[in-house]
Structures are given as structure tokens and as C-alpha cells.
Image (cartoon, rainbow, N blue to C red; front, side, top):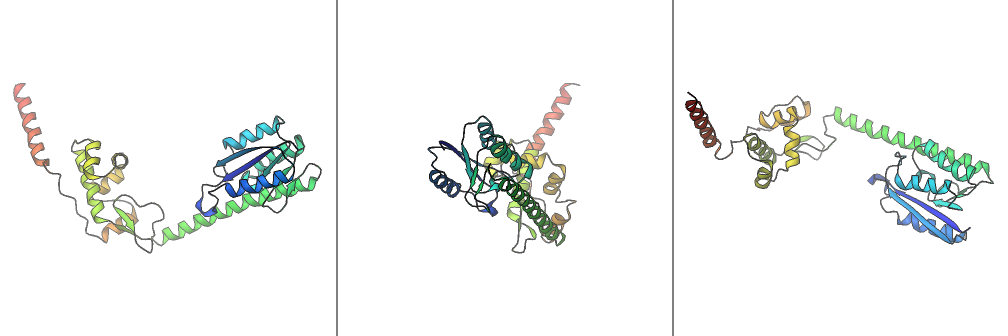
Length: 267
């Protein structure tokens, strides 16, 4: 064999522990060298196995269709995809159409070969198993989140001004809550988000999200919310409206005087 390709994919999920592709690449490099492959090209990328539009996967598939390689190597079938249809298409293009083998370094079978139809069948069964495994994992995560939510625990990133205790229950961070509240009031009072961010440390992005969300705006301005978990957290802490920004009353008086003067000038 003269030309071979390696495909490596690392997941975006920390739980899978596959953030570094070097182990996959090293094992595949050794496997192809043992098979006598002289020229090796690498296709490596980071992405979910559920995403069939991955750029390097599609590039490799097109290269195989064009007859650029004599073999392909990867650690396991699941590196192709966590969807059976995507993995099956790749296998068919290699083994059925181009008659080239797919070497596997860390799977239940060592190769998918044109001269062994059962290897192709078994590889597709593996792909089906990987897909079902992923579905089961998603179901378990969702069930765990629902159970935690039923118990009153907060399962996503807390909003600004809140944190969670050791048991996962939402609690206000009073100092941060009042800081965000004062920052929002300053923007509503006419100050620029840039100036408020510089003075308070509350980012313009956070301010925009709050100001664009009527429910979240009510949370910080009126300390009221329809969210049961947020309401329970607020009930446990005496959170009062923050004092008006320095100079607020002075600026209001100036605005009133200007309005009265303008009205007088038009009489």
C-alpha cells in the first residue's frame, strides 16, 4: 500500500476524556507503518459525533471517493459518527465502492475489509450500538436534570447575582446581586453600557441580556420573578432595591428644569 489516511476525532465532551487526539494518531501511525503504507495524510478535528457535517470527515470521504487512498485508519468506528447512517455511508464508500480496508486500532474488530463481508456487517452493528449508547447517555443526563429540578436544585449556570450551595440549591450572592442591580439602573438612567461596565465590572453583554429580557429586568429592578426557584432563593435572603446611583436626583432635577424652560420658551 502506498497511500493511507488517518481520521481522528476528539469529542467536545469532557466526560469522554478524548480531548487530546495524540493517542489516536500515534496508534494509527504505527498501524499503517506496519501495513507498509509509505505516504500518510492526517484528518483530525474536534467535534461531536452527532454532527455529520464535520469538515475533515467530509474532506476525507471525498478524497476516498476520488481514489486518493489505498486504506484508512482510525481508533474505532465511533470516531466516524454516533449516527449509524453516517458511519455506514463511510464504510460503504471505502469497502464496497473503492475496495479499500479500514483499519481499527482500538475497537472490537481490527479491520473492515473488502474481502470479508462479515467485517462490514459487524462494523455497522457496532455503529448502531454506539448510536444507542449515546441516546441512553442523553436520556440519563436529562432524567438526572429533571430529578434535580424537582428537588429544587439549579442545574444550569446561575444568573448573575446568584450562586449555588454545596447541595446544588440556588442562593443569592447579595453583593453581586446589588452590584448588577445598580449597574442596570445606571444604564436605564441614561449612562452608556461602556461606562457602567468600566465602573462596576458588569459586562455590556450581561447588561444587554438583562435589558432585553423583561422578566430578568424585573428581577433586578423590582426584585420580583415568576421563576419559582429564583423566588424561593430571594425569599430566603433580604434583598432590597439598591440605592439610586450617585447624582441621580441631581440629574433628574436638571432634566425637569430643562423641560420646564423648553415649555416656557414655546409659550
